[in-house]
Amino acid sequence: MTRMKKVASLVALLLLATVSVAPAHAERGGQHDFDFEIGTWKTHMSRLVHPLSGSKTWVVYDGTTVVRKVWNGSANLVELEVRGSAGQIEALSLRLYDPVAHQRSLNFANSKIGAISPPPTIGTFRNGRGEFYDSESFNGKTIRVRFTISNITANSCHFEQAYSDDGGKTWETNWIARDTLIRCTQVRR
Image (cartoon, one colour):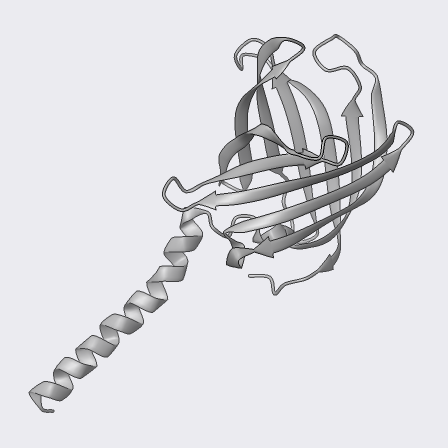
């Protein structure tokens, strides 16, 4: 084999190795953490009526969640529409991936307000569980908010939101959703 052919073969092998490694690195970084959720889901949801008040009154909703991939998975858009005895909830969540921090920001809006509510909830997935946090004002007081995604299977997943008014020492769950897959709109990995 001539020297030129050897160099060309070595360059080709290096390029092939780089192409093969790049997707695995991107996946480890979290860009595809929400790929499992792309599709249409049946949503069963419960919401605590008066969080952080000692109330034990919950309302139940049923409806659908549609999740679409945006920017080849570095973002996705969630559309939630549910109805129950307390009325209807129409909400959106724009989930953006930060490739430098390897984190997601979850940006929430509902149809009653018509704007994205600050601040975004920030976090990552570890060991099959997503945890996202922020600090917000609630009833004139700064609280911590935790949003978790767990029990992820090929056909279902579980979401919870909880508030803490003591800096995260204790948490009160105020939003629980169980999604069951109706239709997958992508090839599963």
